[in-house]
Structure formats: C-alpha cells, structure tokens
Length: 372
Image (tube, rainbow, N blue to C red; front, side, top):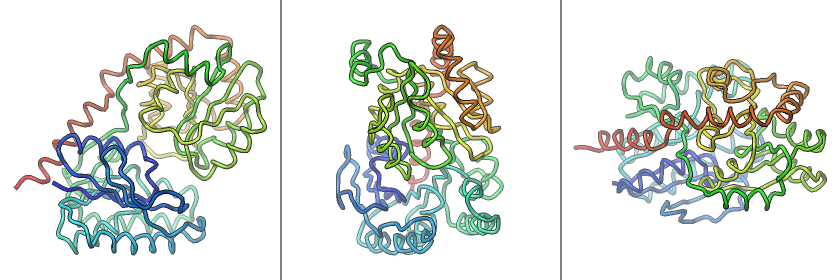
C-alpha cells in the first residue's frame, strides 16, 4: 500500500511527519513525501530512513507573498504527483489540504487530513480577522472530501467532530523515552560545556512568538546559566548571529528528531513559551519533557500545557515576558532539588503519553482506511 504525504516545509525532517512516516514504513506501507523547499537549498530527491522525499519550489518570498507562493507550490507538487502511484494522500496541515483534495479527485485515492493545529485559530494572531474566517470557511468546504481526519488533542476532536462526525483519530505529538546511558549524557554535557551551569534548552521550530529571539537575548544576562537552542525557521539567522557573540548561548543548528531527546536529557530545563493561544493544545514541548524527564518553563496562555504543568508540578508557569522568565530562571537556579522533583514527576507520565500508543492508533486507522 502506497502513501503520498504532502508537506509545506522542506522535511529536514519534520519531527511529527517523520514519526508518522516511520510508523507506516514499519507497518509495511511505502511512504513518499512531496515537500515545499521554501529556501531552495536541499536535495530535490532524497531517501531519509526509508522515506522517499521529493522537494520542489518555489522559493518563498515572505508572508506578503505567501498566497501566491503556496499556489505555485500546489501547482508544482500536483505535476509531480500526477506521475506517481499512490493509494492514500496524507495532507499535513490546512495549507496542503486544497492540493490533497485536487489530487484525490484526479487519482481517486483516499484522503487523510492531518490537522497539526486548528489552522485558522493559529494564524489569527498575525492576520486580520476576515482572513482567518475565510480560511475557516475554506477548510469546512474541503473537509467534505476527506476520508479521515487526524488531530492532536481532544479539543480538536470536538471541533472537527462537528464537521466530519466520527472519522477522527487522535495522534498526539508524544515521544518514547530514549535509552541513553549516564555516560552518553555526560559526554553531551561535556561537549556543550554545561557542567556547573543551569542549562535551558529549546529544540524545535525557530518561529516568531515562541520566545526564540527573547531566549537568545536572555543568554549572558544571568550568571551561571547557559542557553541551548536547536532547530530551524525564520529566527534561525538571528539565533546563529547571537550565538557567535554570546559565550553562554549555544546554537545546535538542525537537530534530527531521534537525537533531540538525548540533548534535552543532558540539559536541566526545557523552555515552552508560546504567545499564541490554541485552545486545548498540549505543546510538543510537554511531551518532550515527559520523554526526557525534565521540567518546563511554560507560558501562562490558558492552554492545557500550562494547566498540566501546574497540575502535575512539572515546572514553572510564567507570563510571556522577559521579566517573568528571568525571575523563574533565577528561582530555579537556587532550587536544584525542585528541578529534580519536577523531572521525576514528568517521568511518571510516560505510561500515559507514549508514541507506542499513538503508533497503534495510526496503524489501526490506516488498516481500516485501506481495507477492501
């Protein structure tokens, strides 16, 4: 059985997409991805751990030209897909859904819509309200053609359930614990030069409104604290430039999903600061904390992440501003025993939040979808 995934980033790889694709590969599916290389700097064709990746343009010209550029991506991706054989189209996020619907009509394949977030809700902080309303209307229209919807939490299930009924599967952004020895952790700590420091880490999308630039600015402002940032996105060059100037800021560059957890296990505290609000969201950083057994500094934006941090005593919840963040760091620096206690609390949640459970759901969904 052949699966074609559609993705609006270059798959370097994208952590969630990688986990899902690898799960399907292990279950006997063939998986290909058509990805939008917005920077036009990655191989056009590549095989990543058995996943066939085809990248196409155009080169993105910024938010102002996004609608024109993504339409060019859809056109290019459609031409590529026309010459491919597949049984299932797996569209990641709303910005590939129109392409997925068009390919379904052309090829007669099943269509899975993987809603990483409620897209119109995510963008409303950046665009006029009428645009987010248009996106919501368009999504409702395209959902009529979808055979199955994947969501990341119960809030999304309730939201999409009103439109597609019971054709929904929850696949959370969980991770499984990584078997890493104490010796390997010490090697990472030595490599990073963080022994004797309180180390803060963020690995993920380096995008605006995720406290990325603020975190880079924060480095070197509190004695005995080092900041580690890994990933890629529109704040990447800013972080790289700051890391060259600041001795206590470490930029890891791109970090493969399978090596991200060991880095987080080597650090002391994971940063999970988000300005935007997506109701019912458990941020990926929450699952990172559970997998790595580390506490969080989370923003108090009303989401489940902040509520769970408080409920399970997994870290500290603060306002999305530098003063509150600094105060939290200074407090944690004085209380290493509390950091250990919070990390132990995170570890205890591994039985509930594991990727093995999500793998089972994904395979069951695909088996039902592709059965005669």
